[in-house]
Image (cartoon, rainbow, N blue to C red; front, top):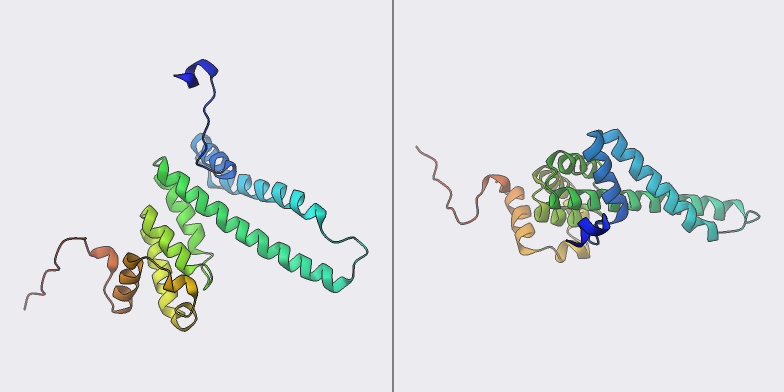
Length: 184
């Protein structure tokens, strides 16, 4: 194997911040370390991308808008990092890290993110994230169903949403099995 000769392993399908967070977790088993790594990665990438921004002599309103945009961008970057950590944890079978990333994403649910996070939860078997997304979508139905990403949901996700709205827990249903009738 080339890896044994070069003593390096190239991973191309996991973003560097997510891989770094995964490795830190594997060595430390500490979620605070994972958060620290992700924060540092966000800080290093945002400082390099914001260096081409407005000049220091620009007006106060544009500075406030830039600050608001930067915090929105940082939140988006945080969500993207957590999604990548979830995917990496799923790929490498690190269940505790997967559940942690799932919980972190549950805390960041919004109308803008609910549909994409529901799809992600379906792909990676993140049942807690799926339940939270479904409950959030039901509670905010008027705003969620008008979004283009709702119309683009996979049929499986739409079925789960409709089942949840009807009061049936989609997690209890097994594909290919008929439900048992209630005994009288």
